[in-house]
Image (cartoon, rainbow, N blue to C red; front, side, top):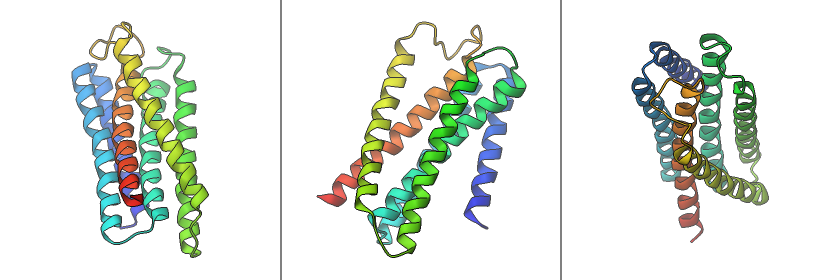
Length: 197
């Protein structure tokens, strides 16, 4: 089966799981589902990277693989926000379109970057400047995700296990996505450092 079809199925099933969890209205169930799904997406990215690395893939293909999986995590978060707040929890949290737009832009940027690196690989070239740009952006993303986690952790209004605020679903998506992107970014940076040593 085509990998794009597999990813469409994974995204559809995982977004449906988040919708059902939000509809139940139990924040503990939602936290479990968002955490399990987002970490699952990160683990798939790590597994694919290891598989490529073991097969002797170039640095460009390895960077493309990580970027593709980062893009899928961003897309998952954006789709969850869109469906939950656009359809299920209508008119409860007015800021969701801004966050959806940011998630969508990050997803598209990651997927375009991965596509460019893969295209270069098929043409028999490797753009070191582009690969290094990706490394710097991964560092920025890692720092941004850590700042997100710290910010949500110290903000007394961001209660993940309470449905009193309209952004309770979004906060769980933010934390789960940030943890997954932190894990994937840190892994990619460590592996890249080792391969350059």
